[in-house]
Length: 127
Ligand code: HEM
Image (tube, rainbow, N blue to C red):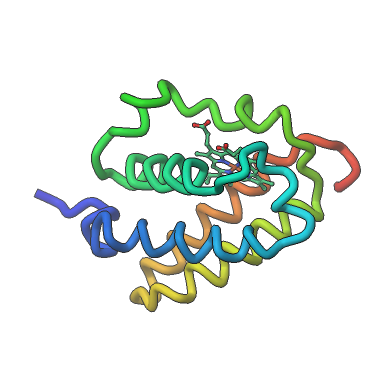
């Protein structure tokens, strides 16, 4: 049987490290931090962790807890323009780099993040 991407990059531990590093960046970001409604970023970190694990072929705990992702819809309450998208991607780039993955895996992960972040933009200021 073919390995899932989730398994190939090291399973749960890798995604835990990825989102931990990402949210460390968000925690210190003066633009992104105020967008998060909760005082504690821990629950948001856990939701992103479970979503990514599921997306890449790991356990489907995200769907059990949150239902169908519908990520664009879930981001509608937040104003996401080019600036917010690029900051999100900057922290994600740093987090992806920190994993030291093999090049092909890293590229696959990064291309997805770029595509997903662009698809979450919900204000028209950027072309
Ligand atoms: C939730 C911001 C892109 C995945 C959230 C929340 C904010 C946010 C403020 C609410 C926090 C919470 O869960 O309590 C942003 C911004 C983005 C962005 C500014 C810039 C483009 C993305 C991308 C993904 C993603 C690209 C997926 C690859 C998620 C997930 C949740 C979430 C899974 C939790 C949804 C739920 O179950 O309620 N995001 N996000 N976000 N975001 Fe993003």
